[in-house]
Length: 272
Image (cartoon, rainbow, N blue to C red; front, side):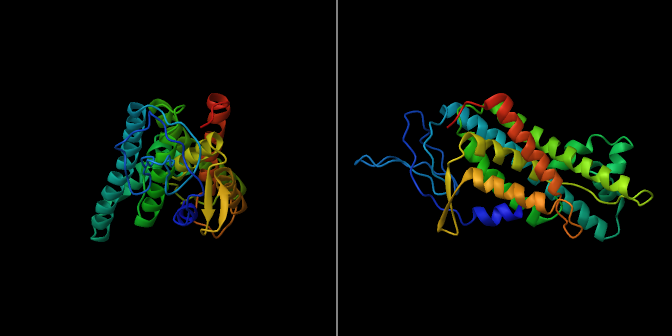
């Protein structure tokens, strides 16, 4: 999600949000801040996006944010544990980190041999700072936005995140299967990991629910959310079979596909 991270750092609001009597009055953060309407009738606004919508109840919003924080907390906790084991590995105590990689990252051969749980655990695993930071930044940025949707209950929010992550693992496994089939006898040492599939699923659901939400590219060109997600999907598709990339583009596309399918099957007809 590094490309999306760089993009999201540059976004600016291009419009306003309508005030709502159900809007929470205490939720503030660096990236999502509802403002009080002015005495002259000014509308509330967010720093990072603009759209006309009616947020859900304060209880639903706070619970959705609790789900978001729990998912982020799990990712961050596992990352620091990986850092600890990696430090031990560098000092010569290698077995714990090797077992961690076997059980917490996704390898096609090991998955086929019975480590099915890695399709889930790999979703929460990061081993370098840039990877976890970019995923968590984007997760918070668009996850907070999606959490305000009255259609997205806490259960749905969690289902979207987990389902997109597992779907991303499925996409990665499918691509690795094709590689193994086309190169018989060549060992498969590649491993998939990270929350990018889940993040892409959340992004795609947000884009489907609020497609015209505007962002400004480089502070100049207004870009709707649907175009942002479509552009990132095109980027992943273009580099899908690149021999030079270290990014699991198939995992991103798998998560994105789940988000779109969930919207079509469950949320279609509901908009912000």
